[in-house]
Image (cartoon, rainbow, N blue to C red; front, side, top):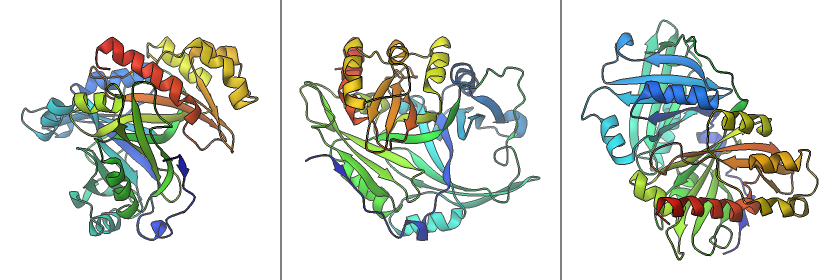
Length: 375
């Protein structure tokens, strides 16, 4: 199977599930306060909101941080035996909720459940002195869920039940703008199932398909389908393992995460050199890129605006498609388990996902797997 670029659009997407964008990502973590400190210190997120014992919440504590249009909710359990504790026992820290900003949460829920989605939360109205939020949720791959958030009648800091988080510690932002895409890892033979879920249940279309010839080395391989909503603001690559001589990064993820889940979050910036320089200064670790990778950048990508020596020093990858080029770099896992990591991406017209960088990226990931003894 060759790489396929799908040009067809799902004509009825806007009729039943218009999505304005990513509302927030909620992580279940072992210690929300420490996780918030990490994302503020290392990634430049800013304090936004808090919910916990002081706000009348007794089973969990949540800290909310924001940078640009990226909102992270970091939630930890306050009681043993609840759903968050069980999630952490199985998965470790990871993404539980990928929430969408919609105009009509109840309609979004009804339309997706009617098309086969499994309910997570029936339409609910929450209110406080700042107005009302309507929300609902459905299950997707693994224990991950999608929430539909309707906030047109709400003026509060985040959601009812949260108060503004005042903090004297506010490290500078690093220029992260929005969520470019979220990648889901699923088990053997599950990619097509979940691609069909996003197509049939949520009205997404297949933007690009990569097979094991596109994403492979001598040792490991994977396959991927990139699903996109109608306005292009939501992109979900869905990865599954492919047959190789050794254990792929997808198999390693599923082993340590305990099933399917969100593998990495790509966040966009308008100045990747500044962002990565700051991230490295603050202690964020990135995958190693062999120096000979840069010997062919000019041949592969043509003229670029950035200084190639600076990109080489920072380990930033370059790729070009018909619309332009992109710059990208990948962190090492940010959890103790080799699971969740981040991609920093700057698009200079390109709409693709860095196919020309797959070989170098996989070799770097395999080198890390070998160090962990999991290749």
